[in-house]
Image (cartoon, rainbow, N blue to C red; front, side, top):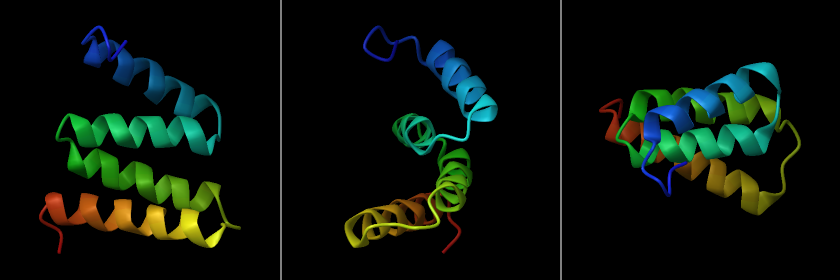
Length: 79
């Protein structure tokens, strides 16, 4: 949907899927789309959800996740 520039529909589908399923990778796609659209507050909230969805993380995933969370907070003006 994003390739067709149907961003509202993509957000709707991903938000619904994320609410219905506790899936890290769906949440990642949602956070990426929020970031791409400049919705940094929503991206930050989704990164926080991803932290709870992955209590045991490989070091590289943890670095990436905290970097994304930090970027979203900064772009939202929270730092």
